[in-house]
Image (cartoon, rainbow, N blue to C red; front, side, top):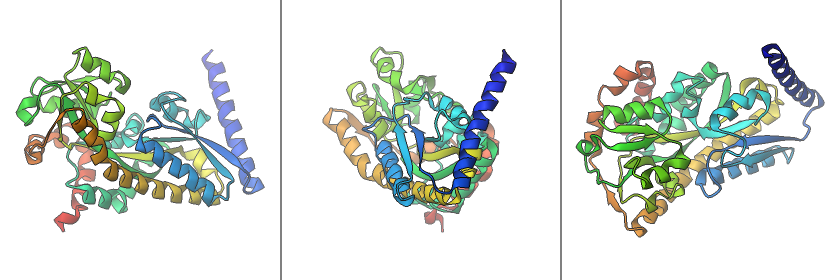
Length: 332
């Protein structure tokens, strides 16, 4: 049975490659690409995905069409990343850390307190440091990563007030199913509980956990304003989304298409960062209007509490963390 499955898998891959080679030999034929997204259609990440599709279509004179599949319509992010090589989808537009199973370096996306400001973030991801990180993750994972845009800055929404690091001790917090998030909150003394984002509302409502952490936009998308009384602006992670392709698939596209897609990815992710900055206050206002208390905390206290975390838990990320720190315009 395993041999049959392996043969069928190989046949699918060969067929996909043959169609790609046929496209290259024939010149610029029309083609359609399927793009997985785990966000919903009301999320500004989806808006950036639409922008990418428009730009690719425009830059290829209408010959390449990108079909968007939001709300994980094609499967989970892990399934779709795994399925890039066999054509389940052709593009994954999601947070970089979803690639951690293929490249440990992708954990960098969820590492806490790497950036001092939005300007620092943009200097990294719109500059040479970001390009190096994307290339190195791509080499480790057998993928091509294009563009890097701000998904949002993560805050913490809870039903008990969190004014300082001390208030986190023992707090039951819903986190993504990611070692970095689990380790971060464990380090701070919380009790992190990995739960799917779609189940976060029910888990909080039923008292299984005391809260969760996400950017304002994603938190509103999960209706956290209806089940949490407090928002603490911990600003602990600046999450980055990227366009991910299977390396073999991308490299067998016509060169003109590769160039057009790369340019569109850069433009669309810069647009995403602009949207994230612009709409954060609007999403924050949703919590204010719902009667939630917004808590501004001393970020330096949280940064001090995380001192030594990466060195002990993720030493292989230190080289990149230092590159990020050196790219801060405020440090020049």
